[in-house]
Image 1 (cartoon, rainbow, N blue to C red):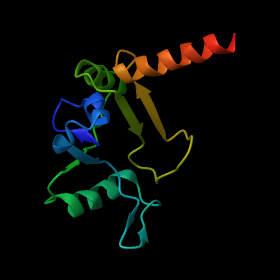
Image 2 (image 1 turned 60 degrees about the horizontal axis):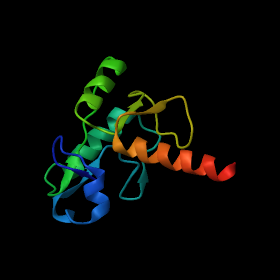
Image 3 (image 1 turned 30 degrees about the vertical axis):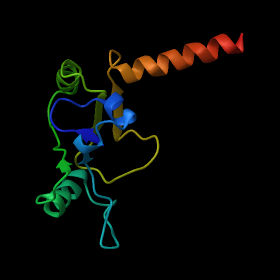
Length: 127
């Protein structure tokens, strides 16, 4: 889930005080009407996804951005996003750890601070 526009704030999501602002962000389509689409390239799956949700209320289509990954990541960090997921546009879906997609997290995002705090707390307990 996300919030509309650049105001994506997961603290708001977790607090449940802003449920009326939440929107579903759709970025991939793996199955449609019982048909497995995972074998199709990402851009074909996204094209079908757009056709399905283009008139839906409360669902935002997440477009595929092509370009220089570090530049896109820097822009996402500058907007305060948690990070980006880079996928090969010409490849079928593959679950689990794979070389065809990569998640890159913004180290300055509050979600990463929570992860680091939890890691540090666990490290202290293990001593």
